[in-house]
Image 1 (tube, rainbow, N blue to C red):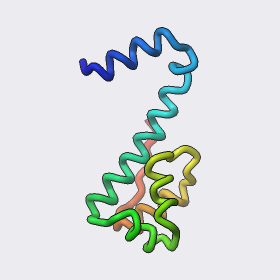
Image 2 (cartoon, rainbow, N blue to C red):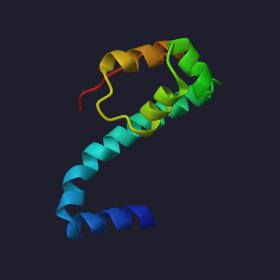
Image 3 (cartoon, helix red, strand yellow):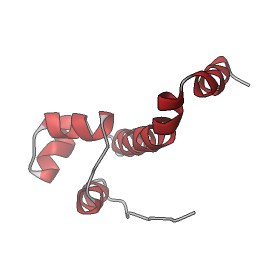
Image 4 (cartoon, helix red, strand yellow):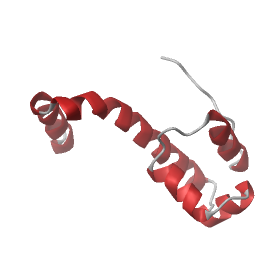
Amino acid sequence: MSDLRKYIIERKKRDRKFAEGFEEGYEQLKIGIMLRHAREAAGLSQEELAHRLKTKKTAISRIENHAEDIKLSTLERVATALGKRLKIKIA
C-alpha cells in the first residue's frame, strides 16, 4: 500500500469532513485527469483544444484542474474535439 493511500485512510479516520467530501472530490479529480490525458494523447495543447472548442485556454485549464459541475454536453464537446466518443457507465 502506498504512503498516499495510508495517509488517506488515516485522515478519513481522524477527519469526518475530509472523509465525507473525499470520494466526490476524488471522482472530480479523476475526470479532469482523464480529460488531460486524452488531450495529451491526441497531441494537443490546451490552447489548441480551446481553439477547436471556440473557447479560451483558461477554460480548458479549469476543466482539467477543477472538473466539478462540468456539464455532460461540455464533456461530449471535448470528446468530439479530441476525436473520441463519450461513454458513461453507472456502476
